[in-house]
Image (cartoon, rainbow, N blue to C red; front, side, top):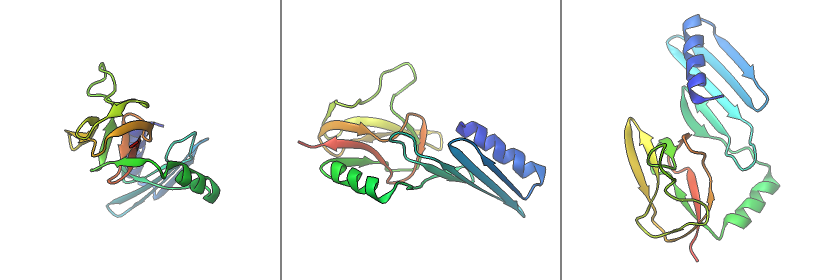
Length: 160
């Protein structure tokens, strides 16, 4: 389900006067509760291969960690040797400067301090995210055009 569809669903429920709506799809659970002048939405997306589940409240994304303890420990041991490039702001993550251009960085690319690794759109402003470390991109942790939170991990970089 796309973000636009979720936002339209929230608007529809708010206008309908219903107090609560629950929707469960194959890999997505949505609960929308409305009160006096207030709409609360919770969306939980089940993790697919290497995706971070996302919970949304009133159309604002919030990351939710739902991995099992053993897989978390394995990932931490595996990823502990890498440096994480994190989001400096809340917004929408873009890997490319425009749809017809190539990505700023791909897995395997070598980056230097100050290289632009992505763009985050916040309030109609496009903010370039520059690398604070030099190294090789090992993993991209966020899908293109996905909402991100402050301090959410975006990339794993091997500094060696």
